[in-house]
Length: 186
Image (tube, rainbow, N blue to C red; front, side, top):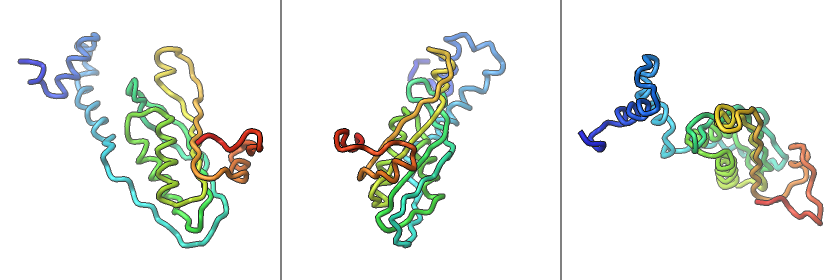
């Protein structure tokens, strides 16, 4: 039987055998379980809808400490943390649960943390037609803790879209830009 004749489970079993886990009874169901995990992370799944509320508000809004988890694209181990999502609406408000569901949707794929924040910020600015959006992610990366440096650390990323907004920056806890600095990078 050639390599192309193997099922995905058999390929994974061969990888586990290659690194010496083929005799471990606790790993017998690992190939099927791991494939089930990956199948649950289908990036082709349609994004959830956003509930829009015609409230005619332009006041800043921030959701803090929203938990998320995703998989490191390089090592296929989790990174997990919290998101702080801020926006300045241009008139319509979004349902808060809609924003959380959109974060969880975008987290359902192997990726780097920077991509998760950027993708969510891009989607929010487009779908909400907001004046400003930021996504601040703070996460532990198990690839950093379990291999390589083998140390815990909190990785923080910030994706900003739209206008510079001193009020949103103040709520985020970041100083507003000065004319010499210019607006934040986009």
